[in-house]
Length: 152
Length: 157
View 1 (cartoon, rainbow over the protein chains, first blue to last red):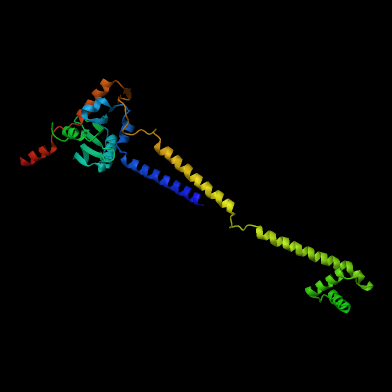
View 2: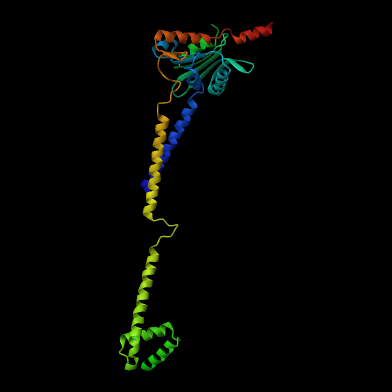
């Protein structure tokens, strides 16, 4: 009887831990990930995935970008993702015209793993939509801020 | 006793004897040698005695078997143990399955590693090409002007 109770309790605890982990993972995942998945490999789009040594000069660990020709559907999709993901941001700089984010810079820190995450977006003067996601250690913050917050 | 037996027999055949009196009659014929005029009843009451004993034994057997028949709402202890064990095993199996699904690495995440570029649906891995497109995309998001400075200068005009 005691063994059976212990068995059941362990199973319940294990299940609870799994569910908590799943919930935590869901929070960390960003909605903009869907933009890269949906539009990255289609015609008219350019998607870059860059990591490793080449990013050392920028003090980054990971770089991912997508540039597409202007499309209302894609723009609306990106806007929805940005509205949702920027809620996690601790630093925001964005320009909104007629209710549309025309440019945005968002810094989302990861407290546990000491990784800073950055989202950048802009509607270019040539009509292209560019969305960038970057990850870097604590020393990336100063450089990235210098590049995108202050005027060159 | 003999007079009594005649009286009991008379009442028996008239249907006026009690169960106890019938028992006395059966006992008399089972353990005594009756007179000649009563001998014709010997086989009858010995049969009845045997019959009543048989019925008593049968009733005992019936009562004992009713005591072992499980009721609808009762579950025997071994069956309860098996059911509980089954649910415990099912819970562990379900947990393992969830773990496999959640922790499986097949879903691509935004933190995917590698160096490549997709241009118009075509994948290229040349490092120089990848770097070139990365720099191009970075230039596209550079701020052209300081929006704050622009708006302040507009207000000051």
